Image (cartoon, rainbow, N blue to C red; front, side):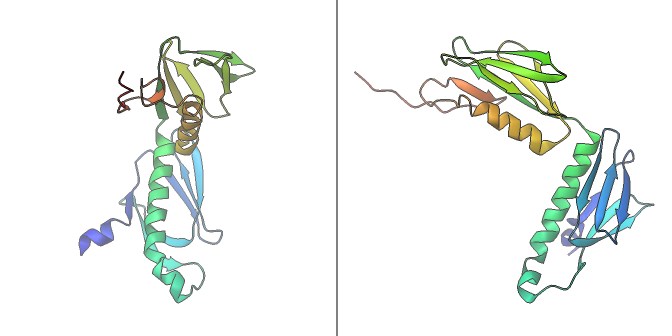
Length: 191
């Protein structure tokens, strides 16, 4: 029974401060790297001495019986969002990509305070990506790239967008791959 109640409890790191406005339903985290806020649908309880935050099953407004069935899912989602915001305010999120293929290259340049990535991916033209604000990229080598940022969603979205420029093909495995990703190769035609 105690295991069910513990999954709605979040421990707060010592270097993170919390601001909670119940009237506006906003929870704000002040971490060493950034400040992030979350609009809540459920009430939360905060214990400052133990540095614990608990998501309750109480809503700010009355709900119908059909919505009450989805309350447990909403509690789980709220806990996951709070944990994600705690991670984003205290650590730098990164995603590594590698280019696999003959002649595939990447280079990085600073233009107007933005990182511009230039890719050579086997097309007849070069492919350019401009990193948005808050994100930066570093070329570890000619075929390895690392994307940094404070938002998990932004970092993974840009990495997926870059990967979509040349998805790994299943016969030779050429393309843009995530670090640690392996492609199961198909067997080609036999003569």
